[in-house]
Image (tube, rainbow, N blue to C red; front, top):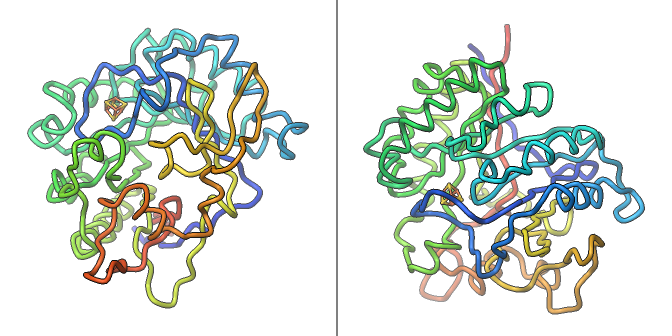
Length: 340
Ligand code: SF4
């Protein structure tokens, strides 16, 4: 099958709501970015889910309409929340353009029986290896079998299914095996993420998990091409810029909201380990916060922002300059199958 590659530029007319509805999780993955001390330990109930979804669909508070807003329900593990089916249906009722649930594959609370394929666009399963030895070293014993069982059930029931692989030094050697697994599972959308040294890896000082430019570029574009040749739509972060490629900060030009159960609203995921969120939801109302906020730092650009907040994310030379030009973490590459 022929394939097409393209950089996905930030879409000024699209809003993305990354809605963390709880931080609780049944797993303890080595690379988890969730930080309950910063993000809260509440489990949002049906009433709050509906209210907060309305906030981001409400064109009086933010001048945009819901039909160009995508919502991604996240956790922790979002299916641990009994309120999730209500949240999904409410997002549909409000007219959200697309609805995705990111899950570790345990699919709690009979979620596949409580919503239908018409209620949401995708269940997006996190799997970090093509077999248990690789995946379970990162995500926990027995997780591979449970997650792949969940994927098969979701595909059988007719749900849209995608798979997320977080690449690091723990599993980059195994990425080459993922296209065949995607085919075996019947998955048609594949997201490759790069590990961020934030959350748990930052607290533990595990900077050696981060991939170098050479390690990333030697594997990821080629594997993405192989998956696309098998009919899979692949998305991965650009990570590194060529000398002539312009830098663009999503915090300045895109419309992304990373919402947490304690009401914090960030516009940049790099900033989520610190109380520098741009906005907060108080009594169901979205409010700007006073400086210093993350948005006051965006003009510093990514290498400086990383050095201040997460120095383990990027390699610097002896003069303190980044060795490679770094893209905004929200800038993506796509590799698409093209029907002849
Ligand atoms: S499944 Fe997700 S939220 Fe849970 S521990 Fe793993 S990375 Fe963290």
